[in-house]
Image (cartoon, rainbow, N blue to C red; front, side):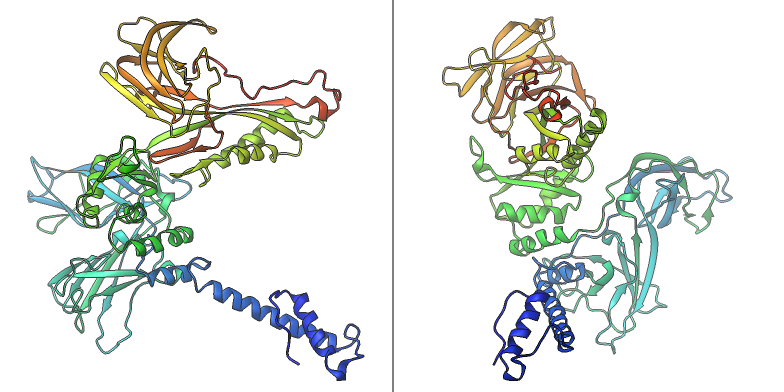
Length: 637
């Protein structure tokens, strides 16, 4: 008799199957499996089968990139489709200093800052001292006995060198960099014909075969085990093939990734030679910091590799679909934290033949114009003729909450402690990857559950949601404005208006501080905007009508040409007007170029005793009721 087929591979099921098999044998018909020594043998067989099936299942999982969990396996599978994961990235700072060569015995013409160590963090940062390097020598002319090294980019980490000698007799020779945590962009490779040769050839890193021929001095890299890297050279068809006894010199920086960010105080520790090869060690000024260290990043995560490797392969080094651009841009600009790509045909009115890209970098909110131009130039290698790429700045849409949290005072450690716990949980949610990316969604029911699950004393919560965008005022300039929220507005007041709220602004021709208000049209799908001032918090006076329009269905606000002279609020030195409304749906979506963020600082969280649950007023006659629909103040305070 053969064993029956079974799919449940837990220990008890396997053991039961073995017993059933033995009972079917006439020699074991009356055998007591539970009280005999055979029971131990059956347990051993079942355990062995269980372990074998578990191992087989795990091995099967590691064969596919979607289910693999070990980094080495995910990297290997990604390598098979031509994807190289992003390495750990050194934090970069910009420094300046000068050298006074007056005291030199022979007046030098140039001074050269040697590659490698340049400066260290002046004091311990986060309990660690950091070193910063340059990757290539930097020469400066001596003018009036002064050589000025200004705006020098330096990279955090330890500068290391490694060498190899090509052995043509070893067909399996590999050029493996022995250190982990390498920033692959820092790798510099030179090749000499032999170790004693003085003629060097500089090889550059290539990430694809486009434009590479048999004379191209290039090398490729691939990640191997333990987050180390292997160098691969050409074969004489794609790239120059190395000859026997060629001497390879490799330099690179191993770094601390994001932990090197935020350093702004440096001490000079470099090495300078004059044009005669004489070291210069005196009359070197203090180091001034132009830009603090930033952009240090960890090695690409397993989840990121799983996401981008198939997309890069699917794009086949060409950009046609939005997914192609989403895969290629992080490859060109590794500082990309999140990206949104959409075609102009989806806009209203449509802009055919254009692709719009919005990028959120790891550090900061915006991508510089120089980097934008670089990305567009690089994308031209992949784009189809006739498609125009435009990189636009991200636009934030903020979600604010006004929550009243009811709690059982008999179970609570105190209102203050309870509030702190809720705030910590909300803060963790606001920092999660679920929100901080393009295309994210604020999930209202999940947000309420986060509050309710914060402590056993919490019985319920009433939460109102507000969406806000910031209008950047072009002060003292006549300009029109358009704000798209990507989410429809809810009409709390269908007749009197004041559904749109704004912070204060000053407008040319009006003495007082004014605010934006709205009045719905008959169809209640659109409305007009007006300016009003306040005699009292509840007494508005309209001072100018018809200054713009509002589309409640699509969540769009347009201001006709207006000259804003001042605003009561500012951000990063720029005058802004905060404009908010209640969303038509409490589930808020960050569409297209809108980057959704939960704004805790402008939100309200109040604790309220639940008298019914606490037993203080079981009848509920004095229960404090919180409205879910109040419109609140007429303006943003």
